[in-house]
Length: 156
Image (tube, helix red, strand yellow):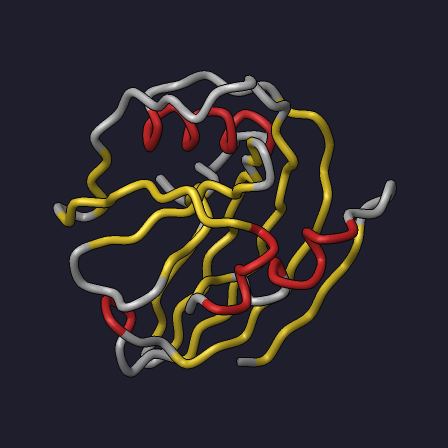
């Protein structure tokens, strides 16, 4: 069971997500409903460590086991839901883990979330601002990743 809930017109989730970079490209997902790209990851299960959750989610979505390099961002995200979250006031706490490079963009998975097919896309980091992609801070922050953990709060 994911650590998240819906209450009235509000939606909350505790999420673990991956930053997977190969040769200047970041791996993002896009589904058949929502008009934007989003990071690989998902809800942390009750009693699950964020590190275990991100490894599980990455494997479920890509069919590949990635190792964690480091925790890069803690993101408090407040946004108005669209697409599958249409009409909801959303609040998400996400841990973004930089994954170790494998030296290849090859993947081996077919991912579905709530019955909706997801497609994996390698987008160039230098042009990420040209895409509707979330989290939006990736467009700037991934160009100059810092050594420590960065705490980011967004209200989109």
